Image (cartoon, rainbow, N blue to C red):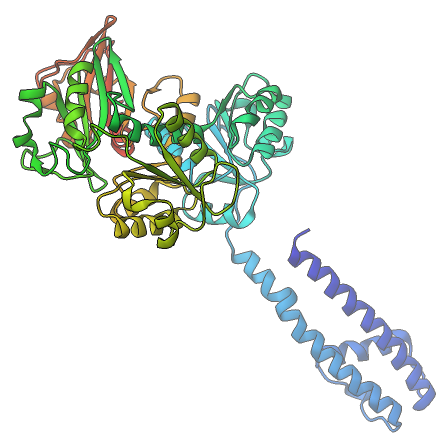
Length: 544
């Protein structure tokens, strides 16, 4: 029973009780003070006339003061009850009648779909991946207001409880392709137990916040337990470790001697402030530039006169030895000879994984956090310049912002950039929508938890695709493209139409990487394409 229904019951009860009491009082008063004998029904008629303000007719005209007072009290009570009826009963009833009604169950015929429990901004990347592959999905949302907002925005959503058997039956769980539980560690475990009670054959993917709790989700029966936060922390830390060593950091191995890698260009690097044409990357280094991030905007292919400014992230393909030689040109002279100092802001799961990677690489770091926990070197707010000064920002080479609040991370980026214009800022974002704002605030490299989570889950629930880059700004997928069969890459105009680059083709167990515009894919080929998430999704929609 909702709030309006409870109010209606209370109002009706009070109304009936008050009318009965006034009927009895009026019946007694007319006999005792007016010498007029009335039946209960006659007295009740008078009370109804009073409460509804329709008039008194023949019964008007009382001589005793007691009856006059009773009638006045009755008049006031009836008026109050009428006015109470409007906000308590009438208005909510009209509002409920006119409001959006969210379905409580999926329509018949909904099958081979992915059930997402519940909605968080992290599922947006997953939904985009599913849409691009024509995989149906439904969000199970227990909060009525959230479900209503999603429904009005066009999401496929039902309002029910995902950790109840009735809720999962309403989502047609037994005919689903997979269930994704991403609420909280305890609720997710409950959802897994409920799902396995209904049907053990349906794949259940659980997303955990604390990696130490993964075992309990496995015991509950989850088919895949994903922990994106440690992966995000490792990726952010590798941007620092790779900049002071020969390690390429986040790379995707496409063949025995062929990789794709993101290389951030640091301040003071040999490549900084030159154009792509002047850099001679292909002529001198032998690598291919398939894309570049300029202030958070991805260009594929970048124009030859595009300037490689500090903070530009190059997306390159080539042999590992070639890429390692080129990586040296993306580092500053200082970074080639010293590890410098890294400030890690935030000591949650992501921050702890960052410091673990830095520690393994024997790189010094200082941890800043609001709470005085073990492992925290400076306690304070990272948006306070005095706190950053105490942490050694003036001499730091890198700052890794592992803050779970995007608004705070954006402001911290502004403060750090204002205090040290030369420091490298590597930031974690909670939502993919915040990435662009962090670049605008001055970050050099940003990776969102939503992107990492969405890719990990998509890889776990999709059998026909292989998402092979989980923790980079660019997505690399392996997929078939029947829409390209019979056309050359040049004729199909893949880059112009989708924004991705076909970087390799797997044919008969061999990885082909020398792909010119005349290359023609075959039906049995598996293409490896790279680009932003929305671009790879567009590729599968157009050519899949």
